[in-house]
Image (cartoon, rainbow, N blue to C red; front, side):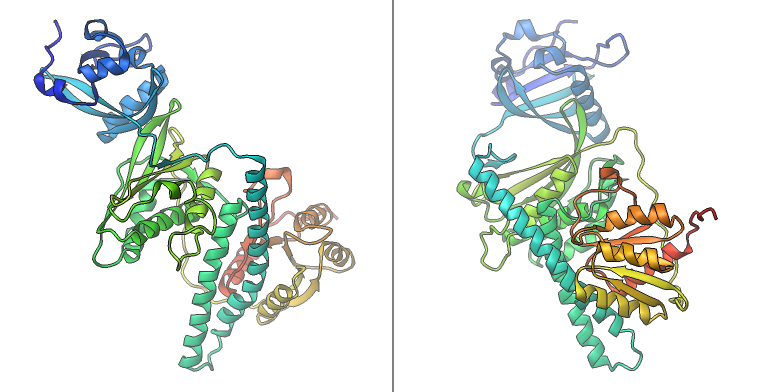
Length: 497
C-alpha cells in the first residue's frame, strides 16, 4: 500500500518528526520498523529526500544500532515514552519516541530536537594540570576534614545517645540531649556530603527498584518544599532495577529537591523514565523547577564543592550528588534558562532482568543483653573514640582493653584472649584491615568489627578479608549495640585444636 501523503499539519511542525511502521522483523524476530512518513524538517536532518526515505529501515536511516533501537522501542511500548540523546549525521539531538497511529495502523512517533549548546552543564570540560591539582587538593582537604570531624562526632553523638538512657534524667536534660543529637546529625550529613564528593564514603550497593525508593521518599520530599510551592512526584520507569547504595541514592533525590526548593519557584516536579543510551536501557531521574534559573556563567561551577549562589548555603549538596552518581556508573546534567527554572537529570544504568533485593526484616525492639564476661579489644588512634567506645561497652558489663594503633592491637591479640575485636580502619602503621588479616589467620573464631568514617571502596573490592560487620562513624550507642549483638549471635568457624 502506498504511503499516506504528508499532511499540512506535519509539514508545519518545525522540528523533525518521523513516523515508523512496526511492520518489519529481522531474522531473530525483532521488529526493525520502516519509515512510513516524515516531515520536511526530518528530511533536512537526515539529508535525504522524502522519496528515498519512505519505506527505508528506520534504524539504518537514523544511524541507530539494532540494540539501541530495540531499547528505544521497548521503552516506548512499556512506559508510553522513551528519550535518548543521539547524533544524527553529526547533529546532536534529543529524541522522544511515543506510540501512535497512522491510517489505523500502529506506529512509533519519533520527534528529534536539536540540543541547544548554551545553558547546559553535563560532563566537566577537559581538565588542565592546574585543574587536576586543584581537585586533588580539595579532595585531600575535604577527606581529611571529614575523617577528623567524624572521629570527634563519635564522642558527641554516641555519648549523648547513651546519656539519654539514664532513667533518672529529667525531661529538660533529656530534651537538651536530643537537641545535641540532632545537631550532631546535621554535622554528620555535612561530613557525608564531603565524603561523597571525595569518593571516600561508605558505599555498599544492592539491586533496588529506584521508582519504589522515590515513592517511599514522597512524604519526606513534601516536607522539604515550602508551603506555597507544589511538589509533583511521578515515578514512570516501572519496576526496573539499578545497582545502588539505597542511602546515597536517597541523598541524591533529597539534595536535588532541596536545591530546586531553594530556587524560589512555585512548582517542583520529580519524575523518572526509561531511556536508551549507549545501546542499553538507562533509568533517568528528572527534578525540574520553575524558579530563578541559573546564569550560563554559573553552570560550569554548580558542581564545585563549596560553591553556592546563596550566602546561607555551604555548597556541598550538588557536589555530593555528582560524586555519588559517578561512583554508581551514571552521569548528571542540568539545563537551565535564567527566569525559567532548571532541570537536573540523573541517569543510572539498568540491570537487565534483575529483581530487587529482598528488604531487610526489622525485628521488634529487644532488651539490650548484658556483656558480662566478654573481653573486647578496641583499637583506634583517636583517644576520644577509644574512650567513648570503651564506656559504651563497659556500661553493658564487658571487660575492655584498648590499643592506640594497629601494631599494639596485634600485640594484644598475641598476648591475651578476646571474644570480640572492634578496630578502626585508618590507623598509623598497621591498618584495621592489616589487623583483620592477622586475626583471621591466627584466631579464625574471633569476631571482628571494623569502624571508619573515611573509607574508599565498596564491599569486596581490594582483595582483603571482610569483617563480620562494619560501623560507619559517627554512630549512636544504639547502632553500636545493635551491630555487636548481631555479630555475637552469628555462628563462626572454630579453630582446630
